[in-house]
Image (cartoon, rainbow, N blue to C red; front, side, top):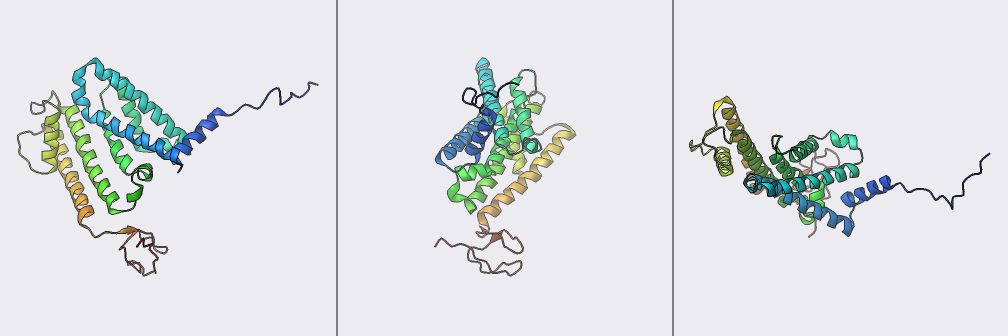
Length: 270
């Protein structure tokens, strides 16, 4: 019978995969200074990537330089996706989220930009997910979490995201196919004019598809403007779930829940 190996001669192997996973969870979800700095760097990189995609139609004129930047961005996105999947508790649940599939589609378009329809403008949706994520408010907006500043910031972010996603879509689909869309500025001009229901009529999209798109832009635009106005003008509320009916928002000086009458104990910093 073979003798058992001496553990001093063969020390147990470290599970590097588990260590890396634990490290990613710590950086993405921890509260230490190191974790906060890491998430701050992630936010800055996300904003830089968003700016790149907003400017991508103009940067395409740089030729080879654009493709170099394109592949560098693809490498950053791939690393970001791998890190997020690793930090997630259940990778299967990660793949069930539609916004993550959008990131994968964008990554594919970046890897083959010359042959694949460039859907990079969809990455601008990351601005929406970023401003609605707990990561952002725990990292950048800790002082303004659950305040009117957060509500207004999200409303503005929703509006900006919709404008640039729509502009990118109009530019990608109608550029070169419609005389009115000769550049990115024309697509942005059409989007803003339609969004605000100004309707100058100097640029209109052709066909039934163009009309349906214009209708959708107007309806969604009105909704976003109303939401922004409510965030700016509505009386200030605080997030404090009622322990009985779970109503989330109450007046800052509320003593009773206006839905069920339960006595509240809202913290008052004053």
